[in-house]
Image 1 (tube, rainbow, N blue to C red):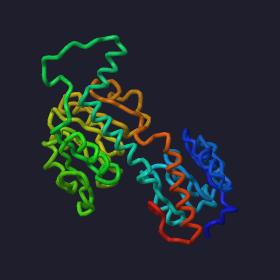
Image 2: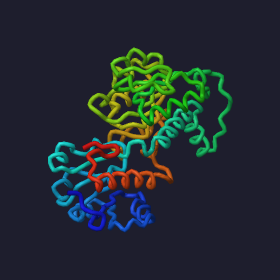
Image 3: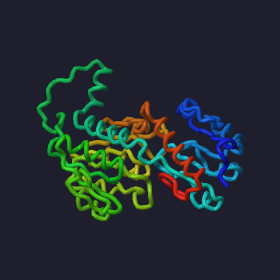
Length: 322
């Protein structure tokens, strides 16, 4: 039985987000507390009926959460949660899918523009006080997006929004999703991942906006990178595990693709010894694609919707995973 409102305790767990402050501003009367480190999280987990968490989660919390009934993920990805164990304990899980669709799609479009306009190079030159002269080599100049072909792997909420943005720049957009019958939206065509290698040779940009699943794990591998033109760019705002990182490093080092913009990596934070840091044609953002000033409020809206469903005894949650 899910606890009533006056007996509920929520734990907000995040190293930086202001989740509790945003929640408290709504004056719900629900008791809550906040943790920002693993030691405190482990110690206080037994107090919580509901945990609101993403990156701080570890599956050792399942036995520690003796009162735990519901987990609201702060992010859209839920690959960090052991769904089998949660189901066995009858702990419900919902994602925050869609909460950052606009933010991440805008970030992806920004990265595409940054690569095309060589903005990272411009920033590096500014730091060195270098005024770059005009370039005669056409291949080394800034470029325009009109007429370029963008492949979007994961034509869901984020990918669908990215397709809209790309069409505003008159790009050709080819989408890939598990079930093409789900619709193509603004994309010019939509296909299954089984057809990906057929279209990779046409790509000027390949954008990953997909979750990490068995189907998408290392979907961009050595074979896929070899099929991309040397002038093409990879943009990843999905999950680091969707890319075979060592294969990407080798392809970049050998200039088999023109560059990459990465908002996520296999290990996060990206280890200081990773060659990706020093590669001139790599642009790295620290998994901030979904972060905006509205993020906490958007997550709290989903949390409250799911709490109300649980209090009403409904069996289906918004963005239900378990």
